Image (cartoon, rainbow, N blue to C red; front, side, top):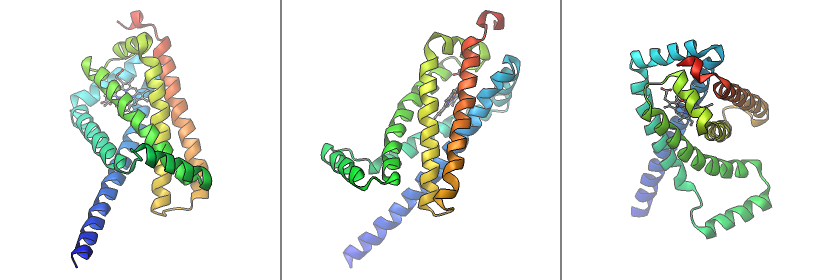
Length: 214
Ligand code: HEM
């Protein structure tokens, strides 16, 4: 009886944790794509980028959005990493099984753990850099990207997009919303599209004449 109660309690708890992981993941996925669209306004010119940044600042959207994003990253990271193979023995067993099974979904989970840990570190550096020179302005962003920020943001772009799209793939498979063969191709197109948009934005920042902006 006690065992039964413990099992019911733990499976209810596990269901809550799964839902928290799902909703924080979807929130971060939406944030990342919206963020890349917002950053890409630099392609239309520094004035458009500055106007949008000022809009987010004026209506306190940044002051609500940034703490929410940081909280979502922390909760999502903590909840998702509970299943990671932390011990060396667990890791070797997992890798042996993955190689033997050669199953795409098992490897997708491993990719999620690696890219997720990289996003935690790179996003923390990126948010810290952004907040330390607040408010956002095209000239400051360009200066940072031209000085040393280009490679960090490029790496963050790649790992965050891969993490987001593989995450969406795993959600759709896990909750059986659509058949995997039908959407895998569209997820690959979306990933390539958003990475290309981020890369073009970074290149515009990199080659912009900062002196002309000041
Ligand atoms: C998980 C990934 C990311 C997170 C959590 C994140 C988070 C943030 C946050 C919170 C801000 C403050 C401005 C705002 O209110 O929107 C910001 C600004 C900015 N982000 Fe990101 N970002 C991410 C990925 C990227 C990527 C991949 C790029 C480049 C393609 C990028 C480029 C920028 C730029 C240019 C700014 C303006 C301020 C600055 O230059 O630092 N971000 N980011």
